Length: 94
Image (cartoon, rainbow, N blue to C red; front, side):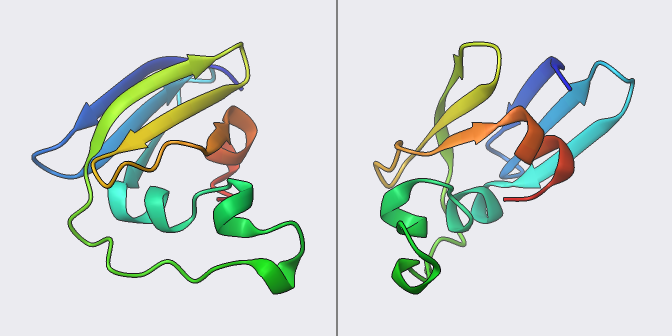
């Protein structure tokens, strides 16, 4: 799946993506931050995964497309190392 539009709404703390199959997805900033797929948050094994808390008021400060496969999201807590693949976002497997 490929996004046709990506909209960030800091007032509502939501990110919305329209997909090329005419479907749409909506994600809260909190869920995106808590479910960050980076190695620091997820670890290299399930035992190393961190439980991320206290992100209820986090906001997205920057979005960057990475190639034709992912989105890098920067949050106002300074975290920006996760690559959210379009497949993960489309299937909501974060």
